Amino acid sequence: MMSSYFKMIKRWDIIIVALLILISFLPFAIFSAVQAKTTTSDVKNRVATVTLDNKQIRKIKLTGNTRTFQFTVHSGDGDENVIEVRKNQIRIKSANCPDQNCVLVGYISKPGETIVCLPHHLVIEVKSDTEATQDIIVSS
Image (cartoon, rainbow, N blue to C red; front, side, top):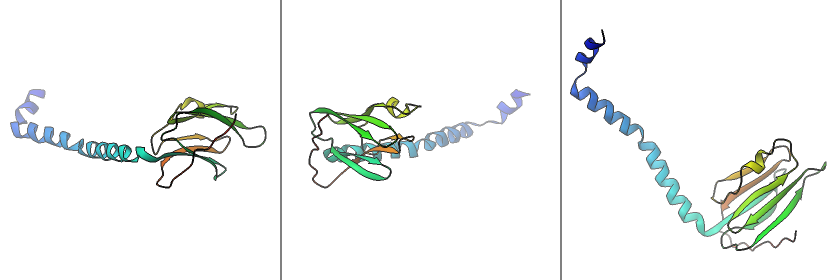
């Protein structure tokens, strides 16, 4: 039964199928190239914005940062997140939320990356910023 199907397949059928499979990966290749180009051009001005309840509470310049520091964000009802900035990266070091998903994300540093703590309504997002921003000095 299968041998009758193999007799129907011609050489050009195989070539066309192989070509279609290769073409199907073209959008992925284009998207990857565009993302790589965008990411490298935005490295000059990376800024992390810390937002609580849709209000920006901190803006930290990551590009060129050589220090390591941390600060605590209190969001009411005893909710708190400890945020750590190390060199060109930022993370939520600890949180008293039940699921700990925000802590498990780890460090982020590329434009477009985010950390979200849903129970505390906290969002950290790395953006490329064209404005001149000053380093925020926070004592822990």
